Each structure stands twice: as structure tokens, then as C-alpha cells.
Image (cartoon, rainbow, N blue to C red; front, side):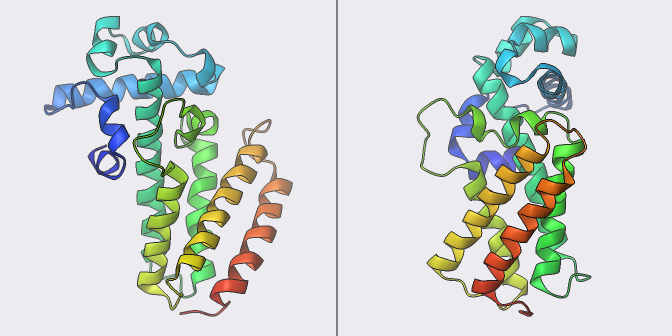
Amino acid sequence: MREVVDLMPEARATLRNEPVQARSTARLTALLDAAAAIVDEIGFERLTTAMVAERAGASIGTVYRYFPDRIALLQALGARNLERVLTRSADEIADVRHERWPEALDAAFTVLIEAFATEPGFRGLRVGDVIDLRPAANERTYNSIIAEHLFDALIARFDIPDTEEARFHFELAIEIADAVAARAFARDPKGDVTFLQAGRDIVYPWLTAHFGPLSR
């Protein structure tokens, strides 16, 4: 999770002790996996540290060794989700099989959709913005970071204008895609295809108007 910690200073504050040994890393992974499973089952609102400890087969003291409270635990899970989505999405954009930016972006968005369907805890928590109950260390949201890094990946490969306006429209597209995906999976674990397709119908014409359909 170090890459995300570097991106978001507040993510560093969630960990009381950053793992440095394999055993500590495995213990932290088990806690986050347990939290993700509980979020899938009952939602993040009802999750408690005691539930996480029991599911992970750990003591409550072990949980508090890493996390001061349940919100910090959930923020760490959101940070892990962010790291996984960023890594997979950036890999898709960099894939030379995608010769046009719409193809590359569609592949990146597919990673987001698949995370809703297959990543434990993602459907209920996403990348953690939904539980941002504390004053943020800065004004950036996790979706803002996703937008920045995906946009940087796009302009590295394609002839897309790197302007403040273009970045704004791309971040808005990310927010729309995230909101529509959340609605699509709110009642259907497989995703309501009507909402997912509607999201594409909204986002791609919007971006094409600013970036051009055939940018290479």
C-alpha cells in the first residue's frame, strides 16, 4: 500500500505501524481481507473492529496495533482498493493493443466495473471517499487521484490536450462513471447493464467533444 500512502498523506495516518516484515504484512492483509468480506456482507456502516478481529482470527489488540479505530481501518481498505484500480487501469491504458484513446479508456473503465463485480468490499466502499468523515489532509479526493493518474497515462500515449479544462472534464467523467457504476451495482451484484451502458453513452460523447475521436 506504500504507493497509495505516498499519493495520499492522510492514508499514512491510518496505519499506526507500517508493516516491515513478511509476517506483519500478512497480518495486515488478513485484516483488510476480513474487513472487505464484512463490507460485502453487511456494509461498511455496521462494520466493527471486533468483527474484523474475529473474521481474521486475530485479537482485537492486533487490530488496534495497526488501526486506531474502524474509520482508519476502512480508509486503509479504500486506499488498497485505490491502488489496485490505479495499477490495473494504468496497465490497460499503456497496452499497445489499444490504438485509440477511446479503446484504452474503455479498457480502463472496464477495470473499474470489474472491481465492483469481483473485488471484495469494493461495491460497498469503493476507494474510500464514501467514509471520508474527517477533515482531509488536503482537498483531493481519491477519485481526483484516479482522474489525474489515468489522464497522465492517456496523454503519455495519445495526442490529447493537457490543459486545465481538459483535466476538469476528465475528472468529471470519472465522477460520473463512478456514480453510475455505484448505482448499477447497488441492487444487482452483477451490475445493471442498462445503467452501465447509459454511463458509457454519457461519458464518451462528452470526452470526444473535448479530446477528438481519433487522437493517437
